[in-house]
Image (cartoon, rainbow, N blue to C red; front, side, top):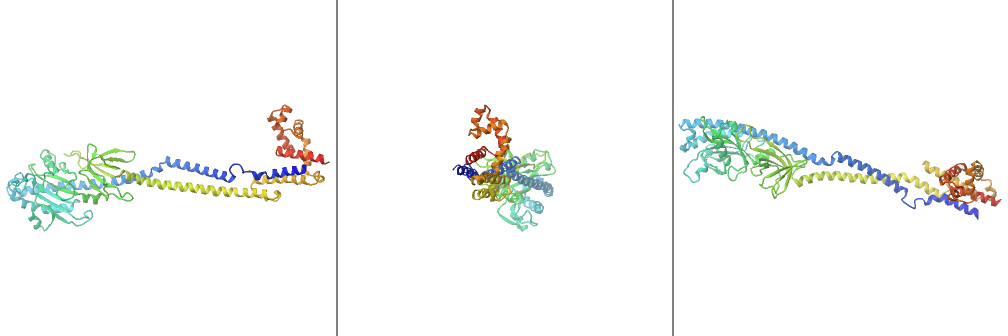
Length: 537
């Protein structure tokens, strides 16, 4: 009966591996968790690097670079084109001044006395029509005008605000690249248009109404009170409507003066809102809600009233209230009272030399709705976040596959050890598993030998080696071993021999090594085998 009991214990010792993992996480899940934690640690490092390098600010940087490049390009074009128009306007003023003075002197009239001879106006104006049209055709502008400080009939009601002159517009919609012009007559005597066979716009009127033409009065007054040359007396008006039912435009006005310095009118060119839009609209790409604003600046605010806009987009909430300029971390913020906010960049553009009679500030801005810019940038970050999520999913899948592949041969080997005789289990080429198989094979041999008849047990090489190795124990080790033979525990042995538990553990290690056993359980197994052997003799 003792033999069956001991054999059962050894088989339970061999089969103990079958219960491993019943408590706690299986090895596969532990390995999966390890791989996942490792990959998540790498992911955290990647995220830290991305934040440190500002990758999540890429949307802001790309938008800033685009706006900055577009702003620089458009401001360069505006500075060049407006400068060219100014030069042509000054040249036109010089030529008109000379021509008009010559014509008046031929009729014995000084330029300052034109109002006394209204009968001469039609002939004088017709003589200048060719110069005006040729100048318009050579200039990148949408119209040319001549306003004399006289009226046809000073007796008419409202004549104090009426001024004779000529206004010709170029109506070709693709004026920016067209090689020909499409001229229309807007102001001046009707007979001149008929004689020159020019088409007349429905908005035609005989004379200019200067009551609300503040730029005309300002240019005339400045010229009267200044000794500066014409190159310092030109004036760029705010965006305004020079004739009713026409589009808003900026006017470049230059005074007309005779040889004695008497001011008798103005001339110049216009840049219409349509021409401005065709010439200076930004490249859209992904920013199809961006718009360009060329605006006068007063008291640090951009004046929407008097500005020109370019682009296919005009915000519904852009009113005529001034835009305050607030500097942000990346973009400027432009805010109207009681309205939405815009984000973008702006640049100051100088329309006058430093010694000019006028020193108004102008600014060119590229902007969009603040929420539109935030949506564009967040959209780019969402793409990056989606890629990171895909990377996390990929990490989980890889961790699962790798852990399963790594643990699979171990699980198969353990299953074989539980279902087959240990000695028949093939090597797994995993050192730890193969060592366990060898150890259990030795234990299996012990069980087999012990389960044999008593006569065969005496021949067991394992038991013989164990008994033989007892003689190699030292006196102290033999004392401990003898107490184990009597069934005492390690704690009891410390009390009997008055030794510390660490000393007993040291003796145990030496006893296990000399007797070729790996644990106290195996030691007690051999002791029981010795007892059984004695009882069987």
